[in-house]
Amino acid sequence: MNPQLAIPPEVERVLANPPRLVPKAEHLEPFLEAAREVLEQELGTVVERGRLTLAEGNHTTQEITAIVGITGRLTGLAIYGMSEATALSIVGRLLGQPMDTFDDLAMSGIAELGNVITGRAATLLSDAGLESNIAPPVTLVGAGARVSTAGIQRLVVPLATELGVIEAQLAVKGTG
Amino acid sequence: MPTILIVDDAAFMRMRCGRLLADEGYQVLEAENGRDAVTKYQAHRPDAVLLDITMPELDGLAALREIKAFDPQARVAMVTAMGQQQVVMDALQAGAKDFVVKPFQPERVLAAVQKILR
Image (cartoon, rainbow over all chains, first blue to last red):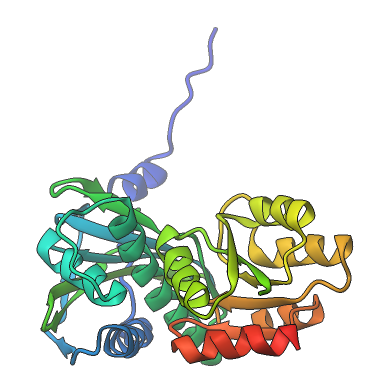
């Protein structure tokens, strides 16, 4: 007789309705501060924060998206989305020359921008006692791709600059 | 003029730093990760190295240790987005002579190169 493997009902209930992981607002502040510092220094532009919203489910990408993994006392993802026109304007400003094609160099520039913002945020978090680290960044090109944040809800803040809007999203959870 | 090895996984950063150094007359070599950096250091023996930390294959701190094991006199400055105290301490203990945190002003990178070449 083959023993029937069964999932206990209490486990099944948890699997069917996993606890929602909501990032804390205080975790967001170092990322926004880092974004402001880096964008103002690198692009010479004023940054205006838009309204903070909470999103759940998979993230759907904009035309250009930089994603940076976060590890340590906080784990999760920082996601920076923007239009291709905004991305080209940003890379052009960083290089001091106009860019009209989103090529590998431009892709690398947007990835690096995400890397520097998130690295600065990790430094601010570490200074506050939340030792954090970052992984090499990834750039996605093309709108409509779905990115899973493993059940962690996302804090979303539009950052308006004179070069266009960068939508910053943070999906992190504390690990104690 | 001295030869500087720029190590960064971002082609964009290699281009930016390379242009900055070339404009000052330095010869520039590039590596795109820590493993590539160790190989190029051993092959070309550059006068100085600008080394990122967060990279695939082999990260910058591990590459620094391998370069210093090969050449204890190697002149290395870290150029990284990671400014945590512990990371800075680890890099200095492993033999880095300077530590530049991104985003940086161009003058800061040139000053780091001049300092480690001194």
